[in-house]
Image (cartoon, rainbow, N blue to C red; front, side, top):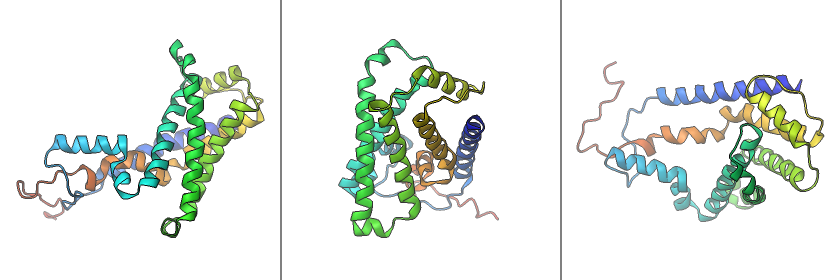
Length: 232
């Protein structure tokens, strides 16, 4: 049963993510609406997108505390994801000496999520624009991170059987459900996240590259911008 759920979630994530990117690609942008000050060349747009993804420039300008929590979470999540690579593919030996960074990242990730959750509720303006889905997503991520930390510090699972299961899952060869109940719970939470990812705000992961306010060149005085709908 777990294997069936795992494959449904994986296919939903891959197909859903690709479909959402395709809809972003096809969405018309009839107007020049880059957020100013904006770059006036394509290389400038590329640099703007890079800094936006790497440093969250817009968030930094908007609210420093949200930027601190959000950046800490995303950076820690990246390290945690890299640490989990060993469960899916062979990794260089050097990775075994860097596990401490992944563990610390897990602690930072959960702490940052807790900070963002409290702040979302505590700050009136943020609470006013928050929906149940926003709280639900933060709680789901907290549950994933918390169960992962429990397996790191309290209930050590059978790593060998987990690695066999994850390798079989990701290569579509099937797998036997590991006996560790905490791991099964952790895995089910991750599968839930994968299944709802394409239909949630988490799609900003791919959507940022299709945002006309970020990916347009500010050159309306130099070049004529023709509305794609003008000929209809």
